[in-house]
Every structure is written in structure tokens, then in C-alpha cells.
Amino acid sequence: MTLFDSPSFAHHEGVHAFHDEKTGLKAIVAVHSTARGPAVGGTRMWNYATAAEALEDVLRLSKGMSYKNAIADLEMGGGKSVIIGDSRTQKTPELFEAFGRFLNGLGGNYYAAEDVGTSVEDIASARKVTPYVLGLKDGPEASGDPSPVTAEGVFRSNMVVARRLFGQNDMTGLTVAVQGVGHVGAYLCEKLHAAGAKLIITDVNQDNLKAVAEKTGAQIVAPEDIYAVQADIYAPCALGATLNPTTLGQLKVKAVCGAANNQLATPDIGDKLHEMGILYSPDYVVNGGGIINVASEMNARQNGTAYDPQWVEGKLSRLMETFEEILERAERENKPTYQIADAIAEERIKAAADKKAAALKA
Image 1 (cartoon, one colour):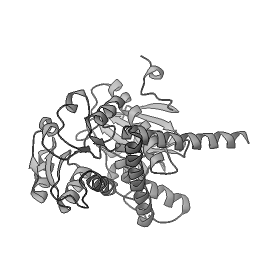
Image 2 (cartoon, rainbow, N blue to C red):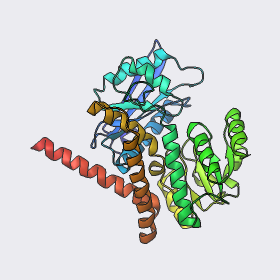
Image 3 (cartoon, helix red, strand yellow):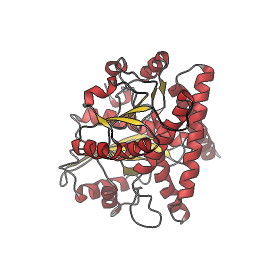
């Protein structure tokens, strides 16, 4: 199968492979859409088993960013980048500087930010050689680590679910199974605990598990056991595709509401969740807080102003309103929630593309 034949290609505008022999950099940048503005999305560093696996991941993530940015009503398109390698042993400032130089060649079509396996420090290394990065830690426009804002959006989404399904305005008496307690997952656990939730957690990182359990009193289970625990909400906050044919039958929850990208292994899993009566909270809606925070930096840079937390709060509040609209439409039309969210995002992207095409013709 060629790149263009892959179902994940999904009309990408560009896919770029970069290699720097000196630093060992092997990176792929996928630009799905620039209809709403420059493509923006994080840079994931992961020790992929094959280049084909890395390509599949970046294509899925890139398309997801187009939808995420559109649903959050941001003037940005969707893109993503992956670096093939072990982030614990192969990261160097020089590698990210090489990555930054390659970004220059894309001429501003794509802006990178941090993601799984990368940090604001890595982005700062790339910033030494390129303007095409966001999520900086220093300067008046800097938005810093987006993880707390991502976690805030996921927490608010859990509260929406709690009101809708359980008729309550806090998490008291509800059990949430959190898969992955890295930056976002750990922040989320603290917020859920403060709101009264009982937590069941898992992660491959034992230090993270211990730290979160000590703060929240969470019960720890093995990674393979998280799907079958008795809980009210399953919150996937690690890698994607954890909702798949193997895990689906194990779930004993009323809702899924977590931070991970691409939670559905295939779209039909969303249909099956709907049939099972499990409320699926579309991932790119729920986890949009981080990209809103990053967008505030681009907004400040374009306008010559400073980072504005009120701008972020306004966008995040509107995103939560959109989330509630999606849930209401899904119930009214008796359709899976992901179909409603996709339709809204696609309408917004198409409208922008049509407007851009008309302007070029004028």
C-alpha cells in the first residue's frame, strides 16, 4: 500500500520526512489542513517499532489536530510531527535544533509544540533556530506547559458528564478509572480528587503512580486490568486506540472521558459504544484546552501583545458549551457523539477552505 492509498492519508496537504545524520534525527511532519490558518500540532517523540508505524501515527494525529483546532474555533489548521527515538535516552538539544532547521523549510505552514516524549525545554532548543514553534516557557507571549490547561478542560468535561448522567454538580461518590498519570493525567487526578471522586489509576511509570496515589488516595491496578475495573467513568490519558475490539467488552462504565488522542481504534468502535449505552466524550473536544493555550501564544505573537489567560478562559468556556451541544444533538438525533463532533469540525474546515479558495480566485 502506498502513502496515498492509506485510509489515514485523508487528503493531507503535505507529508515531510527529515533525517539528520549528525544528531540521529528521524522525523515526519504531516500537514493535514491549512484552511483555517497555519497547521499547528505537537511533536511526539516515541520509540516506534517501524517507520510505517510512525507514519500511521502522525497521519492520524495530524487529521485529529485539524478537527481539534476547528472544534475549538481557533484560526489554525491541523498538523503533527513525530520523532522516531527513545525520549529517555536519545534526546539532545542538538537534535531539536536540527528539527527546528527543518521546520524553517516548511515556510510557516506548520508550527510545532510539545507532546508525548517532548517538553517545553525541547521546544526552547528548537526556538534557537526557528520561529515556527509554540509553547515557549520564557517571554511575554510564552504560554508554557499546556498540560494544566488540557487537564482543566478534561476535568470540566467530566463535570459535564457527571451532571448529564448522574445529576450532580461534583464528583462525590463517582469512581473514575484513569489510564496514564503523566503530566495531564496527574493534574486531572488532583482535580477529580478535590471534587470528591474515588480514583483507580494505572501507568507504566511506577514513580508517577506512587506520587499520584500518595496525593489522592487512588487505588493502583496493573495496566492490563484498568479496562475491567468497576467504575463510572473511564479516562484514557495515555496513548491512543485503547478503545478497541479487545478492550470494549471489558468496560463496566457509563462514560468515557479522557485526555488521550485518537482513543477509538477505528470509527466503528464509537458506534459500538453508542449501542452499548456508554457515553463517549469525543477526545479532540475534551482535550482541546492545551491547544487553546498554545493558540494564545500565536495570538499574542501576531498582535504584539502578551499571553492573555482571559483569552484562554473564554475559548475554553466556549469549547465546553460546544461539548454540551454535541451531547445534546447526539441524544436528540440518536447518533454516536463522534459523528456529531466530526460533522461540526468538517463543516467549519470546509467553510474556511471555500472562503480561502474564493479569495484566491478574486
